[in-house]
Length: 240
Image 1 (cartoon, rainbow, N blue to C red):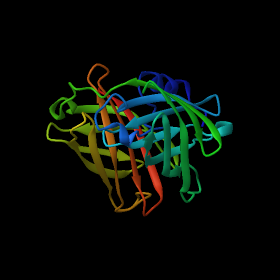
Image 2: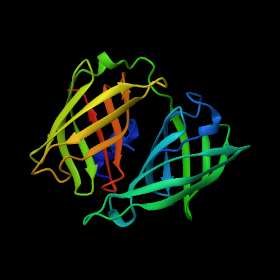
Image 3: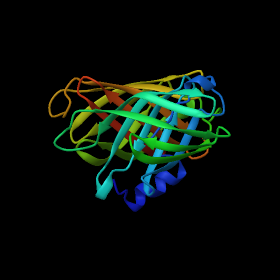
Image 4: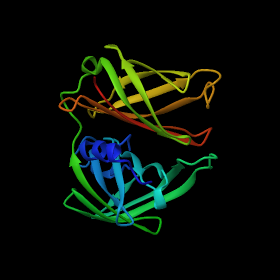
């Protein structure tokens, strides 16, 4: 997609809604490879990755010709300096909703900080930007976070409320969404959210994924998927 100027600013600081992610599973959890990766797809389309310590990745990419793009979720394998992810699932931000498609990521890793390769046949370049914030504790997340959600219906603004014990809630287009944040061992967080009934676009659906918090930026970035619906959601929100 072609990000708005506001979205580009958010990407620059960490993620535009969340997420392209690249997982380097064989490098060992919580190592230098875990964290936020940024780069481009096809030379000029912004990409941002959340890479967890266990090698799971959530990779948000902009689409061609001003489309919203999608989110690739998978795991990776490193053999020497060659990286391969053959189990990626590409969830498309498109309306009418589209079924997910397979995604393969291959490339060469340079010093555990730069990856040059391809997603399927499209050139992909990523650079490790930062590790997860070790100072981001669950109690620090408590607060109100205005932000932007990306999903198949497009971009929507909303405000997320997070409590000190990890409960999360928001209302999106009249739909009540509730969830729970759980700390992980790698300084990221697991997140699951449940959509309410009508008028929710995914009534009763549970989406699961990852959330990262920047203590310095007071910012949340998250990426979630529901394989049954074949849909993904990302959001970026900053504490007010």
